[in-house]
Image (cartoon, rainbow, N blue to C red):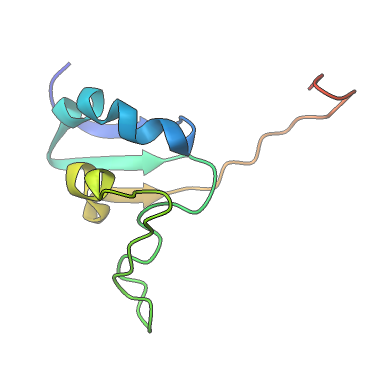
Length: 92
């Protein structure tokens, strides 16, 4: 597909690192990445200011591959709120 203007990441956070080899070719200098993932994101403290400015979360990006491959400067964060009901355990 080559370089894209936008890439939407809508996969489980633990699946991101294994998918980096497929994501990397989509990223050009001006590509924006919209993250729609569960949990605290790997880029959470990027340019946040304060005492935690620049802190990297090893729990979600233990070897820094996500930070280095995608880069926090291109991220557009989002909040996903699925409109669902739980009818019974395991039945959504």
